[in-house]
Length: 299
Image (cartoon, rainbow, N blue to C red; front, side, top):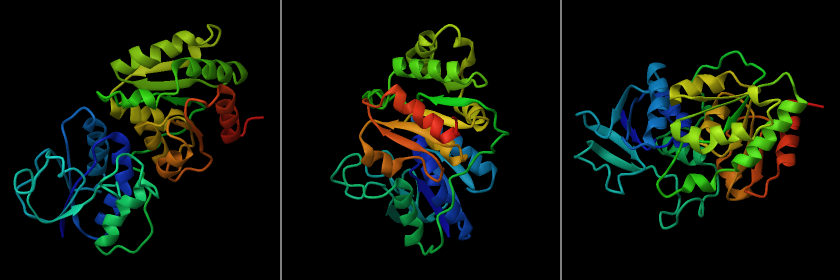
């Protein structure tokens, strides 16, 4: 069967789509993926490139699929007018692959389980009965003692990313405390030029000068960021696509979610052991430091 998947916009969404793609390929299907060309789609494209290189998917398209007629197209966004059957792809059957169970609601209002489970429903509708594969898509390098601070890549026009940001001052205070008390560690972070100006540089400036040199932020593209995080032993930060990348590599996560415990349960880090999820802006530096201690087994 020839299957087209067109639902992988956004870095985190792409990572959470990996188990379904692995499942479809394990069933013997040809699996092609179509992503968009908006800024949000860059992360998805980087993830899908890794999957194409490893043979999990066959072809990767931007906005317009190949000329074959697909047996099934699993689409999350043909309904917003961006992609239409017979114009951007050709399929005999189009499945509604939206992860939102109730299309009349927005966000997480109607969700009762993790997005990966909703993604897997598509594969089960096509006859799959086995376990859910993991989200791994990138090689994991030998771990250093470094900790990764995740501040986020996504900068939507509506400013949604700002609601998911724990705060530069808190990041600076947490980094100072970690680096002062645990002298054998460094903290690393990556981002684009906007991240540098909005978060990475302000965080660095707020860290106590005695330990500031052990905070190592870098301006990178997303593919380089994948490598950088693959060498770290812990993710600490916002609810970001890079959090899901870390979890896919088996890296424990300590993350802050802006919309409460219910949100962190549904789309928290998948498949990692020892992750802690805290609720929103009221999460304190002391809480985060204790969680880092717990996950890493520090005394």
